[in-house]
Amino acid sequence: MIVKPKFFFQKGMEYIGKTYILTLKYNDSNKRQFHSFFKIDPFTCGTIWNKIYNLVPDLFYYHLLWALLFMKLYSSEALLCKQVGTTEKTYREKVWKIIAAISSLKPKIIKLENRFKMQNGSCCLMSVDGTDFRIREPKPFWSGWYSHKFRGPGLRYEVALCIQTGHIVWTNGPFAAGHWSDLKIFRTWLKHYLLPDERVETDGGYAVFGRKDDKCDRPHDYCYTMDQYYAKTNVRARQETVNRQFKEFNILHDVFRHKKEKHGIVFDAIAVITQLTIENGNKLYDVHYRTYNV
Image 1 (cartoon, one colour):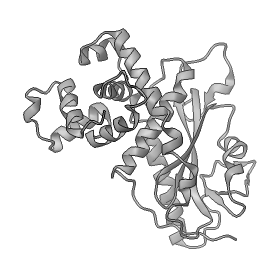
Image 2 (spheres, one colour; image 1 turned 45 degrees about the horizontal axis):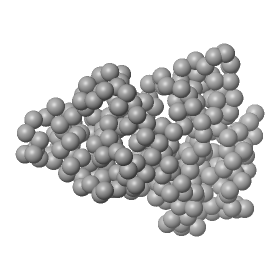
Image 3 (cartoon, one colour; image 1 turned 30 degrees about the vertical axis):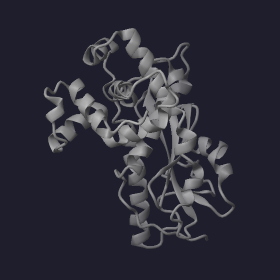
Image 4 (cartoon, rainbow, N blue to C red; image 1 turned 90 degrees about the vertical axis):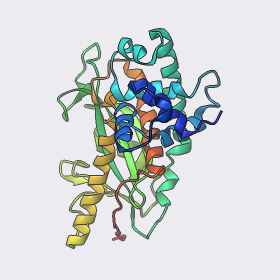
């Protein structure tokens, strides 16, 4: 059943500990508090719930708040279930059902063909980067899990944004961070979906022994003016902004304490949430970018 944003706001503020919830106003102070506990606004909560409620007919709208609370705070289940007034078993069951339902939206929300939106003739339609997340040390020990970004075991994902819109149009993973380089992941999958004359914007890591891939434009490739340099810099900075937004959910920022097989479901769910947040008006900054085939 479709639920209006005001019900998410009222229920969320109740979980936060606010009294007199029916008279609360959606002002800046309450917006910040809601965001600090659930990461997204009540309007995006409504959008997500209206897309998944048919997938979880035995659940209620406030279970979405449970899942957001879990992913944003990533506290112990004992603390979180006390906050929402339920048992650990019930909390765990409902939360993972919601996360799986959001994750299943990925093929409908994050679509590679969306890279053509607002096309202006540029040969580069996407920016691409890899991002790593911490996990517990798997057993038996294998150096392939080692991520040089935080000097510990981790999982790596590939993320691509449409340059013209800033929307997430591709994610791929998880991969063992030390075994799969950014370039190796790109060459194995995404590269084969590009048009013959299409390239992607990347950082300087997309090279092997100094030799780049012909489908990758690194920071100083085809950069002849300061305007081009600043445009390419802004594209990469916006890519890092999205990577940082993923990690504003503590479940992706802290060491993932659940089985690593669940990490992909969580990442896909958060990627979907992030994209829906962008579509709901919290868009990233615009980048004035145009390149031509050479």
